[in-house]
Image (cartoon, rainbow, N blue to C red):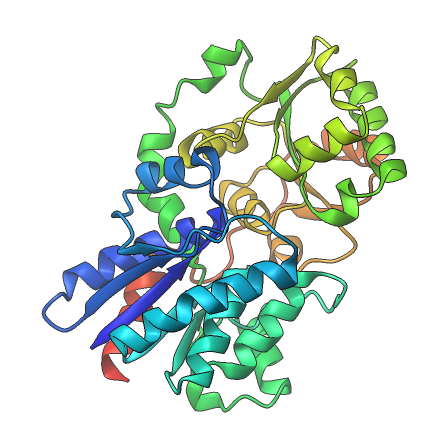
Amino acid sequence: MKIISIVGARPNFVKIAPLLRNFKLHSDRIQSILVHTGQHYDDAMSNSFFDSLGIPEPDMNLGVGSASHSTQTARIMMGFEPVIAEHQPDWLLTVGDVNSTLACTLVASQMNIPSIHVEAGLRSHDRTMPEEINRIVTDALSELLFPPSQGAKENLIREGKSADKIHVVGNIMIDSLVEKLSHVKSVSILSTLNVTAKEYLYLTIHRPSNVDKIEKLKMLVDRIKRLSQDFTIIIPLHPRTKSRLESFSLLDQLNSEPNIKILSPVSYLESLHLIMNAAVVVTDSGGIQEETTYLRVPCLTLRDNTERPETITIGSNQLGQVETLLQDIQEIMSRQETKGSIPDLWDGRTAERITEIILKS
């Protein structure tokens, strides 16, 4: 059985690593080919994650680089079509909801190669998010669907997918977290930054809705500066966010505040270490909502909605807005203890379950 697996952006790397390890355990039955589209193309956004997660060198890199959503999707499709033609895999496997996931699934579908989608069925019900469109189309075209939860399965059923194609397997991101947890505790970034555990806020922001409009970004910078009067704030800057801060002449305002520590993108282990030891995490990332839930760290997600509702109903996450950031942080900090628990099947064995089902398919 020949499987081509696709990665393109940092969240994909975290999800693909445990699957590749399990495929290797069955190398007598699975020929695994890894394709990196190059959607995240610099070392901080790509190679450092490969290293820390133990992902082998990709068999090929399409090197598409950054562009608008449509242009990037088209470039990936053009680069991936010859790969399918040459290798004629039995399955294409994609993870998550980035442009690489959508583009490669479209190519495979057009060339009559069945697709597997890991993390299927997640829905924010907000079609202004490019990721939501990617999720819907990828699921519609995939033959084998691996949702992380019963709620995600129900989304797929409502959209007309056959129940026999759907298998609830748990959260693939947690496999990587569980596997690396012992290594995370020994990371030294807190001492390097001269900060104390549980005495800082960890903030990661990159979505267009928060950073692309100058009025919204100005408001966010103002809220961060006001929070820094009471807390140390650690901010690893996504390239998109850095670009917007620079173009709007706002980056110097953050750099001038002594309690705000601006970092380049951090490695996977450093990110987990900073999440684990934060008093509160503020983010608009999907994956960080899940990591904070597993680690039971209070998380404030600056979005109107989330495709991961169990992080709110079961976990330690809550939605918020830039406008109410100060009040939301104050409310979280006033709680006596962290609420939330770990959802079902977040046990580090998702990749094992997926591999067993693929081998029977």
